[in-house]
Image (cartoon, rainbow, N blue to C red; front, side):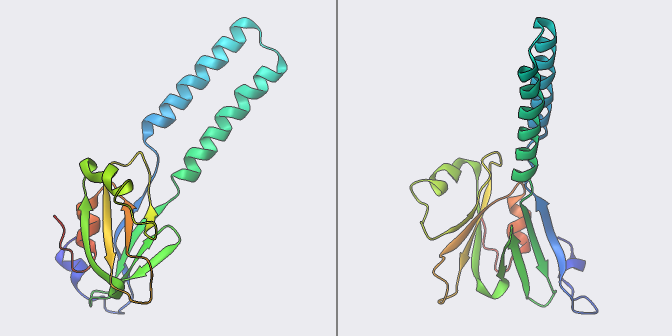
Amino acid sequence: MTEEDLRPSPDRAPRPVHSERLRVPMWWWIALAAVTALVVYTSATVGARWWMWLLVAVVPALLAWLFVTVGRERIEVESDGQGGGTLFAGRARLPFDSISRTAVVPATAKQAAMGRQLDPEAFVVHRGYIPTMVIVVLDDPLDPTPYWLISTRDPEALAAALPDNHYS
């Protein structure tokens, strides 16, 4: 985040200050391609029947669809440069005035945050293949949700883009 991001825009329209897509790792796609190639080669070598060729086509297509669907989740922060803005996590949105504080959840603390310490009323956007998270504590008496727990590849940048970022 630069000094320019903190200045109000001339038209006072919110502008993105942080954006990321929670895509699956590239090695998943490489592994899918390698396994598919191996199965095609093996099927061709042994003279597979028609139903086996159907599986060779359908299973990788379903896995590719799953990878695309899981990796569609988006985390964005928009700011108007005047202290207002919105955090978007998937389809959910959270205005800045509802945020009390934020904190980085390092990879070493992720298991505890998602396990025994997780509040059942928390809003969670979790991807197991992303090692770090950010916790956004809410300050809205009308909302029963105590905090948001969001997977992110760049937790410091996400926490810095949010207001009152007392992260450690």
